[in-house]
Length: 399
Image (cartoon, rainbow, N blue to C red; front, side, top):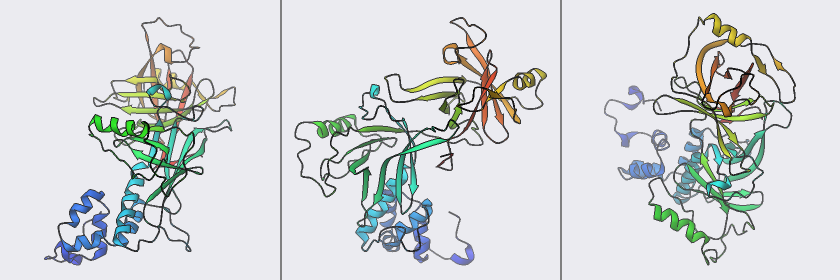
């Protein structure tokens, strides 16, 4: 938020002298506990924190989709208590935004839909609704991504959050900041939310009490309907899903492999500057999760002009074009930088032309293109796997 011009504020202006809309701009930048603490500092901030206009100000800052002229952006908040609940609900929905990975059954948590994809995206939908979808390669044989609905979260007139999977009411609970559990509603107990740093015995007690004999004998809540045989689904947040100027390879990517199937790749940087790429695996076996692809401990790029050997190495390769195609395209793209990488022999194409000993590693290259995407390939292979963005500014691409 920009600073208030001196001409508007005046040399002797204090916080209490600011208009309510300026105070709302300050409060929407704070988390609910911080906003509550700020409200205790003066009466003007306390009044602004109780204003029914605060949730709307927060919704506009979060960039919610514009509503139709005949429908409000948010449900009305006729009293300060409802406004506070609405504010908490909006903050909670904002925490869910982004990409999440479902934990496989082999991790110790049961997964009720073993055939479903492991990647889920939470995005804003119309009228302050948050919609979660599972992402999977498109069935059209291209680089498109298909989305299948999972859970939808909306806000009631009272300001409370309601979540459903189809017609089944569910709870979406945080266990720490980067782990959520989606499970069927079993009663009228309030949301149980644990922040990072909760003692292990509290976490154990939470899950033990929910599953111990008699734990589900509470009276049914107003959301009422039980989820039948729905098992709890566990998800962990995927951090840093898009590249930055300092980390151009970082993020969640998609690309067509040697076997002509579309795969998702996660590229991460470690604390000492190394880069690792891992491929997603569906939650269909105990080997699901991530599969390593390439790594490097030196992220120093080769800058142009490139050597003749590097130019030939790139120009002699084919770019894999489509899932249903039996050939690869030879059209090269403009390369801005090159990075050396390594990979263990057992995670590279099994049809490499050069046989490898067990103790050897395979050297490869990353070619960073001018448009910000990149491709990679290894010694012994004559192809390049080009990777594209899965999302941009929080929105899923090619759906």
